Image (cartoon, rainbow, N blue to C red; front, top):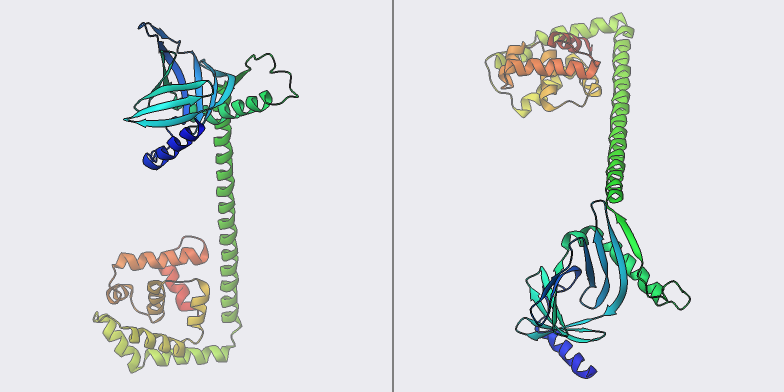
Length: 344
């Protein structure tokens, strides 16, 4: 008999190969029983017998009572089962006490026939999804206690009752949400603090840099300042500058080589300008070009033309740079005055 069963199991595994997983896995509740005479007994919805399968081989029995606020689980034993396909969608259900035909009704119900009575079990997917792990833990604990010779509490064969509170589960869910929300808020606050500290550090750096630029300007000896003014005046009177100014005012677009030449000319006229400009703020290419043209005394309308931008865009760039560097609102003209004052 054992050899035949093993052979049948091997054949089933090779032929069927249940790609869809276990057939009986999950929790089932007894809906009704139909006798050979055709009499049907319906079990009450709020209090039904349960079968819980782990895979298709391990079975836990018990009873499930459902209320509005909780479910009560009563365990009554565990069995080893074997499910064998006999072809044509029919199954043979083998349990400790013998062999029984088993019929599937889709994925939602099974019928197990015992001594001529057809017991219809319906899948309790919602209960299994919410309480499956708890019910299985209870059943395993009861099985372990029942198999222990040192325990006398199960010698009378009476089932034990376990209350699983829906309200408690909801409270735990709320607690978990609260914990996750709290952690999220803490992380958010940490990020805000880091941003604030970084912003404060950057503001201090800018203040220090502005103070250093101002001190360099104030401490510059008069002869040196006069010489720098003469160099700048000579540059603005040179053919190079007038040629550049003519190209800009005529709307010609400047090439990369032109911008390289502009930076070179600025270094000759204002030796410290480019370094001081870059030390203030990590500017974009557009922002840097606007500042260079301001230093070269190009009118804002011509700056907009040569950079192919609207005049309002150029104005916004200048006022935004003032706010970034000084930490307060300021107009575009205030930024122009600051740019013309550095590097001298």
